[in-house]
Length: 363
Image (cartoon, rainbow, N blue to C red; front, side, top):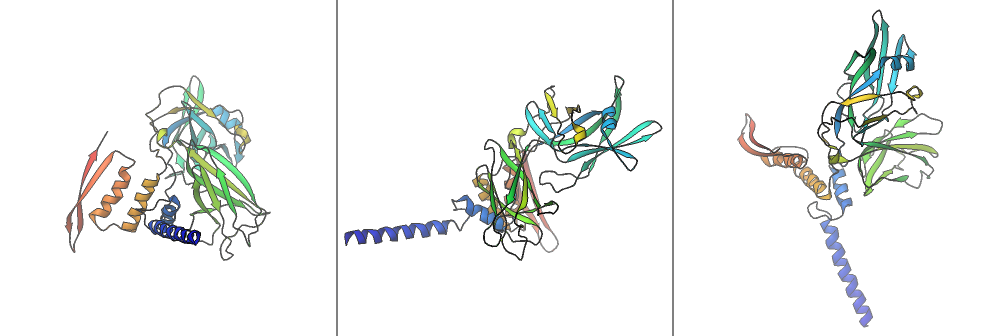
């Protein structure tokens, strides 16, 4: 009888503790499990969960002779391409291009005219490109003609995974865990799907537990530190991968805020071309110079920063009506900058809603 009584008492105590913990997980300010916060982030469509790679303007130099000799003929033009996977090491810090770079050349009576553009053949979660056209200039140095192209580098490296989808899509949910270097942070990824005997298409990325869409898509979440999980739906009303299809995932890794530094004026600059996609790049010599500082790098949100973002989303529902709404928004921005802003309502009537803002800039 004593054993039964103790067992029932333990069950009752465990039930009370479990109920209390489950109740806490329903509120962002009390939740302790990161999965609960990710679920709330999905409800409010908060997808800024990765680190942000720093960006740096860079002047790329190529010999005109190499460009012409390695170009492909196309419609009376010559095209030379540089793979986005080309590695740039600035004082041993790795950088990559945002997109492939294409230099188009046309011969005229005075020689060649060159135009540089990005090859925007896919959607990138990293690139913030306003125009595909790149500033370029041709000049002569020591009797050699060079083409200078202004590009934007991102402080990141690239890791590619290939998986074959062999799960039974009628019963199981296809799920893949990609284990990444824990010393770096995930800056983003792109996922591509190839059906059997079909062509590759880019998948739309959806945070786990968000609504399904009819277009080809995949779910993603951060299963744990350094582990990216990608899953597919098995609901036949929406996109379901075919048996024996292929999944290709390109993950970008970054140093986050550690990738920010003042303009580098040294000569420890190494450029390693990649010729897998463009064989003509094999053995080409690329030169370059840093033209500005590396800025904008941010670390991945911590659990507390994610909690603050969820609380702000719950408070405002992406609508700003009060001075407190604005204060919450800029408080989140202040977490990654040295700028502090305080808002005060100045006027709020039928004609206008006006606020005063006081900014504290800290060097």
